[in-house]
Length: 321
Image 1 (cartoon, rainbow, N blue to C red):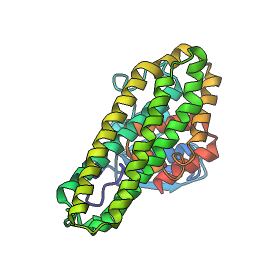
Image 2 (cartoon, helix red, strand yellow; image 1 turned 180 degrees about the vertical axis):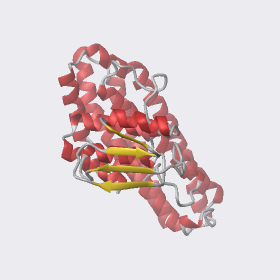
Image 3 (cartoon, rainbow, N blue to C red; image 1 turned 90 degrees about the vertical axis):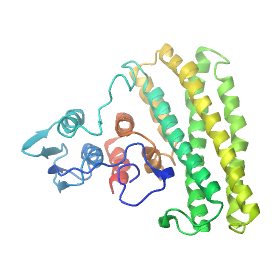
Image 4 (tube, rainbow, N blue to C red; image 1 turned 30 degrees about the horizontal axis):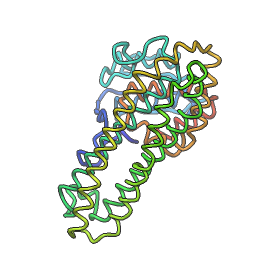
């Protein structure tokens, strides 16, 4: 799964935010394989160790044994225990790098999605630059196959990113911005206009990748197309980074001033996840891959806040399977 497992060789373009670290510490986890809390702990342990031994039981509350020490309790308690015994990488959000106590849940979700999209965009830019440098010649990594096979993989990855970005923009336009507009009309006009301007660029890159896929590899036209693609991806990355930064600096902090109750926050977060059906189903691994370990775990916390036990367990099991 995404940034948890790095068994196969990767191009520099594919390096995840925090590569998997092996540990020889013996770890045993007991719990129901269908319980959300058990799946949550199993996911967290993917960042820590390859020696996990999972023992299915009927208990809805998992029990974790690391070395000679055993603990059972809430997922927050178990997570802190994991970090105390296996410190790297940290899974518990630190105040200096995370969110304030009063940061609304929807703002946390939006910012984490921004970070994942930015990581994937940066990966595509590195990959596109690598393709342009090689100009259709043999791939550096044999796992990528022939140039035409690599372009198909590149196209698939970009299509996943495109779906993620479009769902995110739709969620902001339908859920986040209307709430802020009620407090200050016209506040989100610029952000909406940014979305509208980005769409032709984003779709244009997708069509350009399709065109490259049918060109003769190694030809002058093929090399020129790869260079043009690399340039357009760099432009898109800079544009998106600026857009995300402006939203997080000028727009999203004002959500706190709206003073939503916990019940209202919960409803808004539910609407967010419900609108992003693809991102929270077949693209869920893709989203998680672009996050640091503590960010991924915190995103799962947000899911567990608003999803019922069965739906949450289904989403988490999709990652660890």
